[in-house]
Image 1 (cartoon, rainbow, N blue to C red):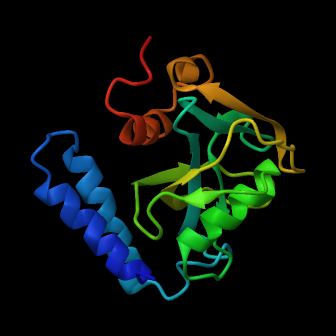
Image 2: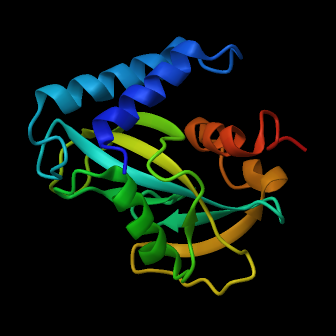
Amino acid sequence: MLPFVDALRSYRASLLMSQVQLHSPDRIAEASRCLQFLDTDPNCFERSNAYGHFTGSSLIVDDEARRTLLVHHKKYGKWVQAGGHCDGIKDPFFTAWEEAYQETGLKDIRPIDPWVIADINVEPVPAYRDVPEHLHFDIRYVFRASSNAPIAVSDESNDVIWVAVTDLRDYTDEKPLIRLVEHHFGRGSTAR
């Protein structure tokens, strides 16, 4: 098991050392921002932290069918990857894997590269009910499952569907999600 701080450092180093210019300075800045947040805020994994908190997300893929699983989130009203709050758990990988099961109903989900970060997205979350605007430091991992396996909609979602990678942009224009899918399936893979 790779401790989270080491996984973050490794992710940032891989961006700095990449010979392929797929990574903008923004990606490196987000990784540095996560490291600083982890280092300076002892409550960075707590949902009660009004500034922000770490979350864990899972891109669930079926490589043979070239599909990815999307969840239509009730609160946000849009298609996203499965994921959720760490709620005190200091391992976003565990959170991502657990949320993948809870939000999709799948019974067999396997990490492609355990504890290795595929992507990071630091994003402001708008105020909702009594929760003020805050930041999600979303740590993203890739998992594999069969698109033939039964799926189920959780209480947090309106729907769960498998989508062909080439159809992804019919469901979302969210750049961080497109970037995550293209990280796994290859640059330009979401284009028709």
